[in-house]
Image 1 (cartoon, rainbow, N blue to C red):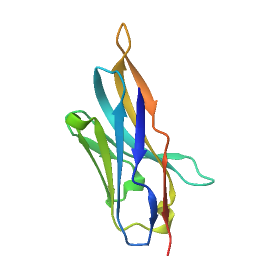
Image 2 (cartoon, rainbow, N blue to C red; image 1 turned 90 degrees about the vertical axis):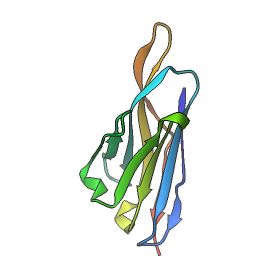
Image 3 (cartoon, rainbow, N blue to C red; image 1 turned 135 degrees about the horizontal axis):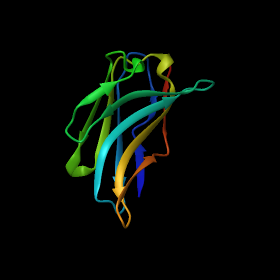
Amino acid sequence: VQLQASGGGLVQPGGSLRLSCVASGSFAAINNMAWYRRATGKGRELIGRISHSGSAVYGDSAQGRFTISRDNARNTVYLQMNNLIPEDTAVYYCNADLLSGQPPRWSNYWGQGTLVTVSS
């Protein structure tokens, strides 16, 4: 089981990016999926978390500019980031609770991270 994040890159201030994270491997179900970020010299912070039914909660870092969504058929969570500012520069990580194994149990997984750099 693994989470693969993609979509990071260099963007100018005011620009937008859409991150994706797909869960792959052998698992029976996905519960909550989330995005976090870690900027250099700072701790990890929650951007948002979304339930299987699509109910989302956001951390302070989202600031109304970020939207989390998911496609359960594709086992994918997205993070739409708009009006990006240099302070959004960070490594962005996806996180998910997956049901796997025998007997099945819920475990928490992290993606490898994708770097977002906001700079002119």
